[in-house]
Amino acid sequence: MHDPIGHINGGKGPGSLGPLSPKGRLGGPVAPGSDVTGKSFIEEMKGQLAEVNRLQAEADVAAEDLVAGRRDDLEGVMIATEKADTAFKMVLAVRNKLVDAYEEVKNLRV
Image 1 (cartoon, rainbow, N blue to C red):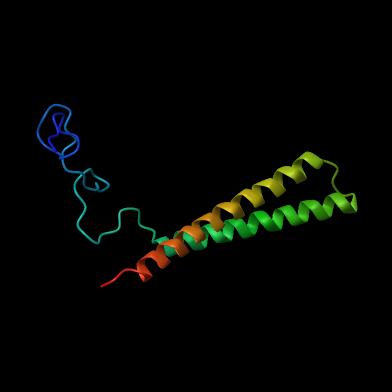
Image 2 (cartoon, rainbow, N blue to C red; image 1 turned 45 degrees about the vertical axis):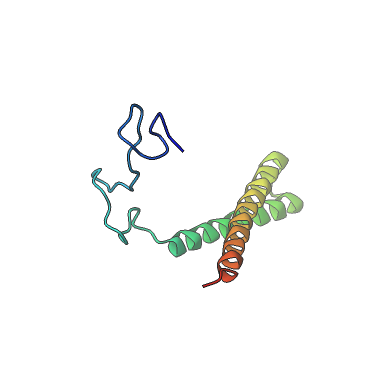
């Protein structure tokens, strides 16, 4: 197929994007296998799980304080609960995508 604009093939035509490659901190190309962000995926996931755990603990304390009468802002408790629920759903969605990717790789024929 002919690409008259040059976007698809990365040609030199008008509006061409050229070859796409990751950029380093100073704008230069990144060597294969080097880490651009400085954090590994595992470290990032551990941090996110810790954050979800913290949000759930805050929501639990807020709910307990509301029931015990030490707190009277129902809205704050509901917000804390929804934050924890949303964060948990996000981590669960990432986990499900990882499981799906693992299943797909597992079923590849070599």
